Image (cartoon, rainbow, N blue to C red; front, side, top):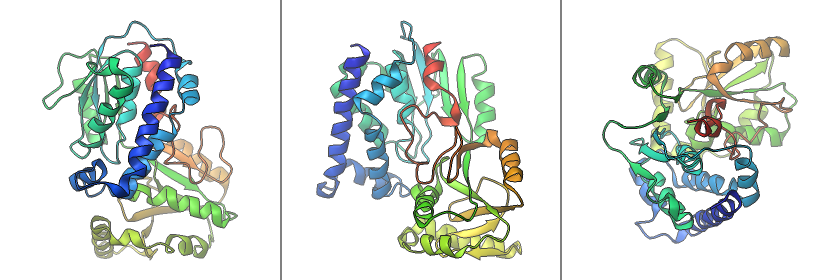
Length: 339
């Protein structure tokens, strides 16, 4: 099957995923979205639907063909160990898809948090590209007999992965976060889109904005009005428990927080914040802000602003990656084409 044929089949695959999403409200109790939510309470039905819709939206035949035509693949057939993340729904599917499309075999170690959606997507994919059927497997034990590895984990697991997989070609990913630079001129639409960047997936994704860089004297009211317009996130028990816990914790640490209603605003330059906490840091000038961003670039996934520079992201687009957007900005397909 050539690139054009695969692109056409992937578009059909995407159409079925869209159909599955559209029929969500008619699902029986055994439906895939329901099951994924029961397995992991952080995977709300709304967020699962959003994730699946974005996967489908990225797979028009034209987008796929343009993407794949950039690479020259060899004979393939290598065994690629995939250690998947599970922080947001189906986040590891892109690695699986890249591996199969590059002609290799995927030996998949799923995250314990996402054991429903990945098999569902793979099973659906095989309906349209049958040659993939015997080229992926799900591994429960320690991965053995592989030629290269793509592993995603925490900063702690990164150190372990680098040591364990040092003798194999590898992509080793660690924790990353995203930040937004505000200058106070943002429109209501900008702030609504920023709200999406902050709260989608409860802030658990590396593409979620977890740090706001704001000018001194920033007026919070317009943003706080937006983030408090829909308070339904507080009905999610785990998120609400985080709010309660960190309110008490930072109180004991004698830290002053801004109560954002649906999030705790904490002054900190760190781009890493837990769910229900949003960091902010004031800057004197944009030059100062840009210099700081450059100093922590290796820990960032997205830099978001009103008029994004090359390599940056517009408000509202962090959780809508293109098919050729790669985690940690490392070209997965280029890596696989050389294995």
